[in-house]
Amino acid sequence: MRSKVIEEKFNPAFFLKNAHIQTYLASSRLRATGKNPMLDAAEEKIILTKGGVRLIASHSPAGENKSKGLVMLLHGWEGSAASAYILSAGRYLFENGYSVFRLNFRDHGKSHHLNEGLFYATLIDEVFQAVEQASAIESGRNFFLAGFSLGGNFALRIGRICANKPINKLRHIVSISPVIDTDKATGAIDSNIMIKNYFLSKWRRSLALKQKLFPEKYDFGEILSLNSCRSITGRLIESYSIYKDAAEYFSGYSLTDETINGIAVPTTIIASKDDPVIPVRDFYALDFRTPVNLVIHEHGGHNGFIEDFFFNCWYEKMMVRIFDSIGSSRNT
Image 1 (tube, rainbow, N blue to C red):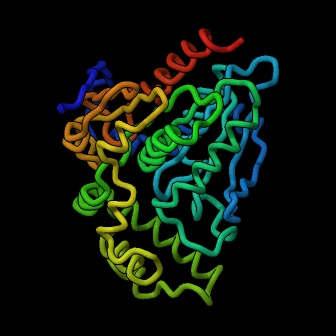
Image 2: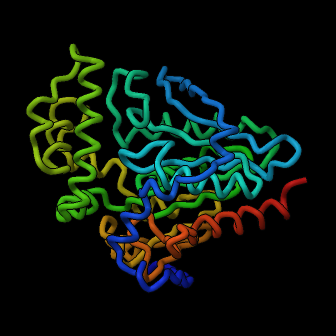
């Protein structure tokens, strides 16, 4: 069955229509400059899962009497709870009356020391448990989940798990530029020298730190010399994982019709036709049904959707509109 796509117009300034500019600005520290009351209110949390995994998070309560609800934000691969797009979205949500919960995945942010095991994108259970725990922090209030890139992929898989394990008060999921076919996304990254070098630089630093913290467990010497995301992934999987090869690993967190059709929570997916990391044909190849709404823009790059040089962001406004409409009809 052909995907159902709702086209909504995102109109960036003419000098921001380039996909690579949008992708660069998505993570630009310029987006995080200025006062951020969300950070002033932030309280660090340690999430402990049933398997003993520890994850660092940050909760910024908007206030017991004025909070419209709690929004949990999931960053992308090699990002963190302090990534520019997380800080920007969190600030906008906080200033519009929402409490914000920012999670670091394992081995992201300043969390490498907390767990001996490596991060794999297939580790959905620990992230799901973190979402469950976050949802209970502001008891009785509406809860929302928003993910970006790999975080968007996690958010959609969590929506699928909710069909069997509902999360109380989870009203809506927003997924920005989610990874669909992970093998194709890896190829797209490796084919673009600037994007590849950006991710390799961050990944090598992360692996080097993990090796330093657990020298008896890891020796990444040869792996760190490899020059593509695919080759590093393959060697890591071969040496340190339960998977037989990268193909099996990639299939473990790629999104399929079964995943999308099983999502049990109202969901909005935002994508762009010019995304240099996630091929738009990956979205058209899937069968999207209610309660999932797919919005594909002509422009936006990867995780961008910046409207002007004041860094106004289309999806930040969209999230507040959606969450406000749900809150006005459901909160008591």
